[in-house]
Length: 302
Ligand code: R5P
Image (cartoon, rainbow, N blue to C red; front, side, top):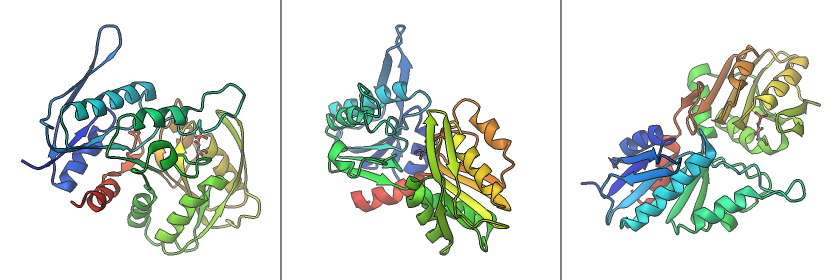
């Protein structure tokens, strides 16, 4: 029996399967259902006593539901005698409410971080967490917090699928996306990159301008962390096309695609639209498990 067991929650099972395979670990089972009154029921079916456990769940497809499921499972793992408990939360919900934008608002990510911290986990891994105003997430989540990136996996996909991109420009749709545009540009052999200017009007409406970006007759490769309503991407594509972009590819780490976002994006006539599988959607074609496996191998000495 392997010392390491990988378990997946209701929004992480697909990642857990690949992760267990990549790490040569046992894939365990967790039963999750509902009590008649709507409370979440969790039962760990794997034998975890004395073993190292990696539990994977994204806080998506009902962030409140998956948050409670994740907290209950992680706490149960400790309680059941797991020697080490490592949480992998590829998509960390509530990260965008990282500040009190209006008086009286809850700063949700701080509360979520406190809940995770209270579980005394050996480590927490997430992927491209929305850290726009948080400079040091370990202050919130504790020292063993690791923020991985899915952009290298996206770059590998773009390289394999589209080959050399010539004089393409990598575009971050707002200032914060510069970090992802830079990695993508480097991974694709040193492409040029630029960021657009975005102003948020409401939770579903943004204005994007592409001042001084040279995309005329060129392929634009937009990279962002999250696609939620699709508003940011739709506006960015409009701005790039108005400057003469020849083709547009969109790659994102967390394709939440809420409501009618997918249809909205399909209507843009993009050359390609792709996301990782940190969350499941019609465009989640790039597995995130290899990036997580690499980090776990390094940190756990596997
Ligand atoms: C914002 O800061 C993020 O990086 C994304 O650009 C944003 O969450 C996308 O949201 P939407 O698709 O609703 O425009």
